[in-house]
Length: 233
Image (cartoon, rainbow, N blue to C red):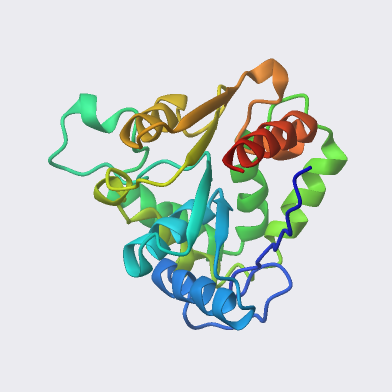
């Protein structure tokens, strides 16, 4: 029988956290994670994240692997920014945006149309069959972060490149991706290849294989995660 306590963390200005306008950087979030673990006396943890992958990678970069048992990396590319010196082959599966794309994307969050832009930007993150009421709920949760603050975090997040950190990971790792998604499944396959003995799970579109496969097919997602954690024992 697997006995696990789960702690879900709302980042600064997101969810139920205070709507502060400072520290909206991935590196600060990674330090926040370390401080939370210390305050709660958590000496050993398994870390799971989606956008939170960047926070996890930042944590490993700053604090190492000593207090981490395992990683569950859910559908986040090593970078979103196409580096100008990359070949087309290098950029295609890894990144989606030029620097100009990133700035234009961020500006729309804070514009008067920010709420509508968020809804539009979220639609491709779900399959076409995902229920409308549940999609509306997901958007409302996202909108708990004020739109005027979202560009600051997005710029910091999108501009980072974690390739060098990922190639040094030696922890037991589950990598979860999706067939129908803005992040190509090839990016998740690349991550899994870099980490010795990593387990890769790609959700097909018919099985709710979107960026939010944990919402669209929670039964299978939970089975995959529980099986991975159980085998660690």
